[in-house]
Length: 90
Length: 417
Image (cartoon, rainbow over all chains, first blue to last red; front, side):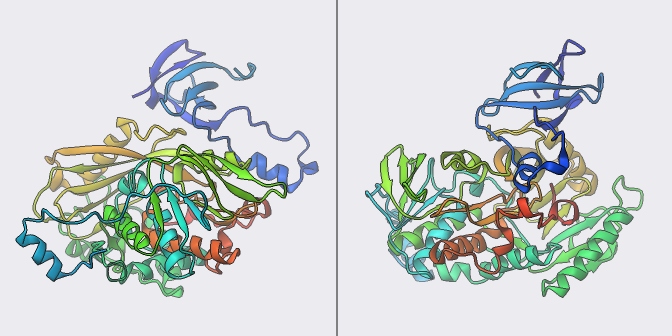
């Protein structure tokens, strides 16, 4: 089982305490009604799905309950770093 | 190619099965082909076979980065069924089930398709209503599916625990009798052998590294680890790696790749006569002809290409199996493995043209691609040969994520996700 560092609790905890919440840094459009069909498609459905370095959101559900961001390699599943929500992309 | 028959089997047996010829030649890439299939799994090999057999395009290469059938084709739980809710899905999956019938004869290769029935369990009122809705929808589409009481379910599958005190009580089940299993490796090998006999080159250890395009944007060929190959038509059937291949043509796809795990027990005598699925508790099981219990789990929760999953996922599945089938509590598990499945937002596949001229795609089958192997191969071949989708796969286009005509099997289907 993967150990994940929660940046809020500042502890490495087992994966079953966490819920993956998909790709990180996908911003909801500020003015939804001005968006074209293409832009809605990109926001709702298109995902990076890289083979390698991936930015994703996790939530420490059975812990502090907070969302944070992580960088993980999707081939090795190794976490490079985790950081608090709102901090710039690493 | 030697014709397989009872006589040839008997004749080879006299020689101790020592002199079987190779099933198909290990081809080296030629400089150009009329069509290229990227991905040598069941779907890709099937597409190459049908291109040559039904649509008259025989100058075809299948490019496989590893070995034939080493990806999801060799990693799934071999379940075949077509009891999907929506009309589009029912037609798509039933097209495949119809092709499974007679596939062994057509390929002259025993794919061991066994119509032993797929039974889906209902554990609560919601399951009962949902499965009965499926049965009615399936019947309207000409797909067989019937309701069983708990006792009828137990008669059909004796190891089932139908005690009302069970943690997951069985309130009934939906049974598709035409559903069943097939031998997954044989499907890949059978298609490879039959396609090669029609002139298709099957090229292993040949990873595509980029897609070449002309000034008008149309595809002109691929760069591979074994040199460049020219072609005007590329069919991508690369399952979990589709996003990576599509990036080579500058296309972002609505896909995410997840590990999906399966496991088998030690082999035992025949005890389990059918396929049983329970979506509520996330477990499904059948028994292979070798005697192993073949058990499937749900996907892991994060995007990964690692082809392995976390232990707690299969622990969860085995806990459910032990509850539903208490007689297997002392069985030991022999092997576990993972495959990478490409999942779309609506859990339906994408099968058709792409915005790039000459580039076709068959992807997004998620956790349930094996059952569709002959159908997906046939429809990808049709789409590549005619440059337009067949009416069956027309709704499964890429545009649906833009115009909103999703085929949302995720919430409503009898699919284990």
